[in-house]
Image (cartoon, rainbow, N blue to C red; front, side, top):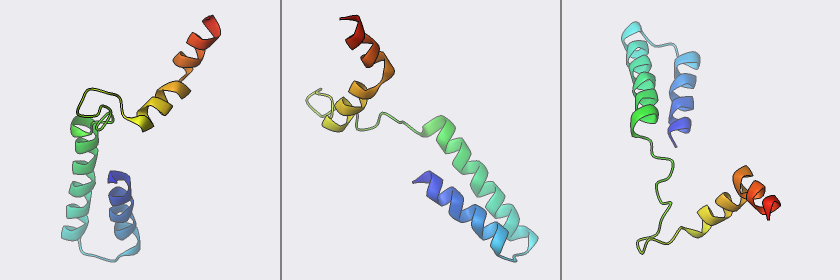
Length: 75
């Protein structure tokens, strides 16, 4: 979702013909998005269900990881 917002702001800066203040606001918004992605974005949000069980879509992703495949080959 943040990537879409980043794309929209960057496109608005390139295509639009705004004044310097509007461009500065856009640059600050893009910097804020990068800060949010670096410090506040949690990729494992929704990884576990309330009972502590791993979410079904995450089980599939874990099964597809190279570590899991290496574990299968070791057996």
